[in-house]
Image 1 (cartoon, rainbow, N blue to C red):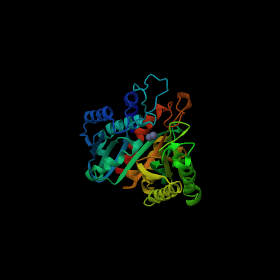
Image 2: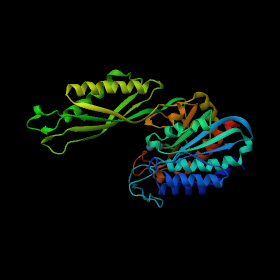
Image 3: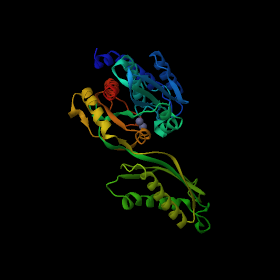
Image 4: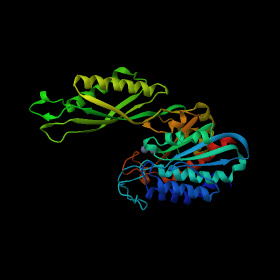
Amino acid sequence: MDIRQEVEALNEELVSLRRDFHQHPELGFDEVRTSQKVEDYLRECGFQPKRVTPTGVVAALSGSGSGPSLILRADMDALPVLEQNDVPYCSLEPGRMHACGHDGHTAMLLVAAKVLSRHRHEFNGRVVFVFQPNEENSGALPMIEAGLLADYPSDAALGMHLWPALPTGQIGLSSGAVMAGLIQFKIEIRGKGGHTGYPQQAVDPVLCAADLIQSLQMIQTREISALEPTILVIGKINGGTASNIIPDTVTLEGTARYLHEDRRNAERNLRERMERIIAGVCATHRAEYEFIVLGSSPVLVNDPLLVDVVRPAAQDVVGGEHNLVRILTPVGEDFSEFSSRIPAVFLFLGCGNEAVGACYPHHHPRFNIDEAALKLGVELYIRAALKHLG
Ligand SMILES: [Zn+2]
Ligand SMILES: [Zn+2]
């Protein structure tokens, strides 16, 4: 039986795994049921899975001879979204939803592990299956810090994301920077509360916040080349209790994203620029501040040599070069914690299909995937691993 037929024979199992994860979404670092199910499935396939972090699962599969080691990675976390889809496998947890497709990623990698375990005599070296918690908020780093790459030394890593902006049957694959570096931050502006009739006796953090939101935009329009895309957006403002009271504090939260390959300095430079402007504006308003980085991940950069290895595998899956496209997105993805340490490739698996309602963007309450894409993802994991280790 060839790989395609073998995956096809497991399609029902693949879809029911995905639907089971979809019905039981768990937020980042709380993937208790999911990680248990992953571990049980791997054990049934003959693996000896290990926990690297409380919900981070790893299993290794050795081939017939010595050779390189390849990480295949999937993420398992869901989002705090109230699902609005009308499907029989809707989320059973109100306010939690797999709105980013990680249910599909987990199911695809499990079935890929099962199939690859039957083909271990066809490759040398080792495949390391990594099931990662909390992709939405920097969950890769704790696994790496807990010794993932030290305990399972690897030469390369491969990850993928279900991508409804591409139709089923297309794959996004290209070299260089493909997903943005991301800084999630919070700024607390501390003024001095008072009566809005006597603003001179207070220090108004609302006015300071308004000034700061404007001034921070200078970074992208006046300090960084337009050829080095940078996006700085405040998504949340919190402060004040009544129209006639000047509050003590205002809190801002936002994201800064950058999409250029300068991995070492881009984040540091951006943080320094932000802090300089925050300090200057707050000093102007006589306010104090605290600048807190809630999480960050570097730019996701695809290694050109590894892209060349994976390209023929991707062509085999989707029937030729014409179905491979270039994707470049300001969305962040913490697979970059792997790509900044070892050669890595991240692919975008088309799963868009309006006929089945798979036409909403990631994180939307009606996000869904065309499940026909799942088996293509499994095949992609398998063929890429066999190409790299074969
Ligand atoms: Zn997401
Ligand atoms: Zn995602």
